[in-house]
Image (cartoon, rainbow, N blue to C red; front, side, top):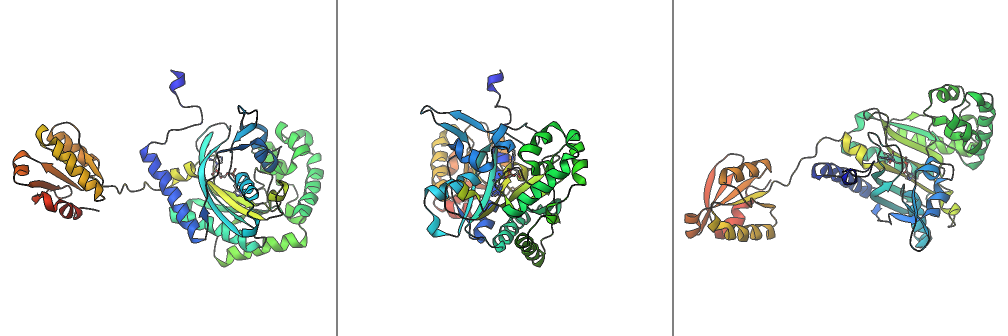
Length: 415
Ligand code: HAM
């Protein structure tokens, strides 16, 4: 029945996959914590304007990918397609300007009506960091280094390249826009339909067009480096020197413009070839004009976000460290006592599996499958003597143990 399928582009995250997600999220939280980023949680939906005004009316996200609906109070609401706009909104609505600089870490689901494929869903999870209130390039360096450190902690650096670009300050970008449009006009008829529209509305986006014909044209285009003013050149040079000093390898990619309109100066993506077409793992940049544009105080910002599903596909299988203790009654008469012992062990901090049903062989097999460290077997005669049998699941060795001393005895098998 079609209605029992998940909605296209959404996925159930079952325990094995959830372990991978948790590993990615906990690693990010831990590494971000070392750089002073504190976790925040923001609403999953906002007024549509929060995204429309920040990400840019002409961006793919706003023009065709948002999950927007009118709620019962006749308000236009949108499920968040990303986290930065919400952070900027929260900064303004909580009046946090007195507390700068601020460093936030966040995680959670995002929603975009994109064409689903490997590494691209309509509901996906991001983790992200935002550093507000620092105009100096040292912030850019710190935030990029944090991204590199995070990927290193996940053990996937060897498959990843850092692509780096500058979009300059508004003056440089305006100058570049003119130069680029002038160049592209000569090829207007050969551009893809999408890029012909972009030429009028958002010409820089043509630089990262996926269309082969566009890419050929763009190869010969002037780069932003010729249009940068001195301040923008210096800014980018400082970011590069900082990364060089820390031996963070990167490739300067003048075609990296990013799909969201709020960026200026630094733009970057950690990308991989290992996942096919959807290769961006961690992506971000500087957004100095965003908060002011949304109606708040003039406050610089820089950050990145990463797709949890994409990273989860890249990491090694996380070890399941739960290693439970199984409690198995030999017969129905010991069922109640099994429940009591499980209760005591759980309150002492152990993970305990009760087999619930089946014969001894079946329950031992299940304990084995669950990777149990030990099995506590409750036999009628033993219980009458106040003892139980503990089976070491790695050696198969069995010993009797007084019920009174069970917690200490089981503790020896704990991983
Ligand atoms: P973004 O490049 O749109 O940037 O998304 C960041 C990352 O989220 C991507 O590199 C990718 O790993 C993941 N991602 C995006 N869309 C999907 C999807 N449909 N399915 C699966 N994963 C996806 C932002 O969202 C900015 N807010 C980043 C930022 C933070 N810039 C400054 N601060």
